[in-house]
Amino acid sequence: MASKTPPKQRQNVYEIAQAQLQRAADVIRLEDRLHMILSQPKNELIINFPVRMDDGNYRLFKGYRIQHNDIMGPYKGGIRFHPEVHLDEVKALAAWMTWKCAVMEIPFGGAKGGVKFDPRSTSPAELERITRRFTHALGDNIGPNYDIPAPDMGTNAQTMVWMMDTYMNRGPSRDKNAQRAVVTGKSITSGGSQGREKATGQGVVYAIEEWATENDFSLDGATFSVQGFGNVGSHAAAILSRMGASMIAVQDHTGALVNREGIHPKRLARHVAETGGVAGYKGAEPVDKATFFGTEVDIFIPAALESQITADTAPLMRCKLVVEGANGPTDLEGEAILQDKGVQILPDVLANAGGVTVSYFEWLQNRRAESWTLEEVDARLHAMMVRAYRTVRRVAREHGIDNRTAAYVHSLQRIQEVYRERGIFP
Ligand code: NAD
Image (tube, rainbow, N blue to C red; front, side):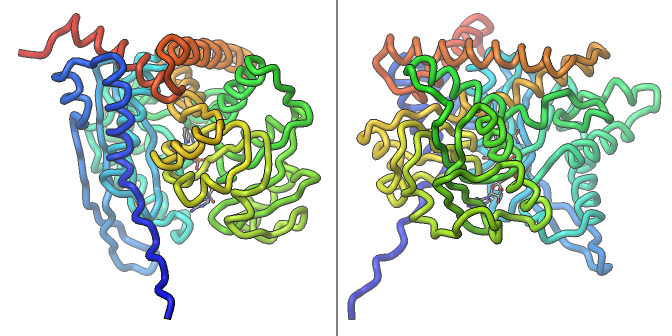
């Protein structure tokens, strides 16, 4: 009997993050002591907390907050609710936030958090209790001047408003409103910013526009695929479509679809809101994972989980550009395969930085009691994305390196300069 090939062991995501750091450290000959410091987070908080479920029973949840580095400013990074959340994943995501904020020249450090459970299988009331209990347990480990969470996979503006409200109610009433900036990504009514909800997708598109200009490529008539049709994927798709590009293929946790004539992002978003996923949408053909990855497009936008573009899927891909809306979607083998094929990559720490950039704007507005218009937010985001894109491309050309390593090089040089000036206490 023919023996089945065992499924490939997935590369550990934290090891991938370490290898990426090593590559850039070699280029700039990063000081050893700094490499040592940056290779581990400053603080790793793991909290097991009980929550009463709707049936009256109690369930124990595991939550994480990993604070990677705060030399450039307060810790900043999202909170993920997902059944596969684990320590090494949150550590990698926290480190990526440090590099991302430094690439964007935003005065924040890097952090990430998460709770290991499936938010789709809990009721809204349970979701609220889990969020509030986790926030309570985080206590003084977050704060508007210290560590500022935001939405990520499985969390949204409502989650952030519950976090803000819980945090505010811990202290005296007279201080309440000064605490609004403890989280970003809030609803506009509760202190959020115009443009924050679409910010990551918008930033993805600003990065694509810069790439198109640099490569003399027209987005009008271009084709693209999106993996993950949540906050990032759906907004990126809607904005790109308005520019004349067509979404040909899409995949989420419920299935994959292809339509060479184009899939309407707004109609698909309505279907997802009603049914919970892309499966069953009538405007496209259901396909398997391999067909989704193998569909020929100009631009491929991963906007779901880590390690999706791998030695298994990268050989199937036929595109000119991969724009990493997700964090860590490409593993080391997947990246090498894409590079061999001549596919260009706009790395996560640049491409999806629109979210943290508008989070920074929200934080500023909260602290200054200001309210910026959508046009103002978009114009500032555009300027910052363009500056970061051009810097990364310049560094890539100067050193003859890929865009990801160039983004890391720019971050590390800025961080190294601050460590040199400040020294290491005592
Ligand atoms: P979301 O929860 O809104 O959407 C996640 C999407 O991924 C959903 O469509 C879901 O069906 C899909 N998905 C989940 N598991 C999948 C699987 N196994 N295969 C295919 N699809 C799957 O999350 P989001 O906020 O859009 O985040 C998506 C990615 O973007 C994450 O990597 C996140 O870290 C990153 N990101 C998000 C933001 C932000 O502002 N929300 C900012 C920067 C980066």
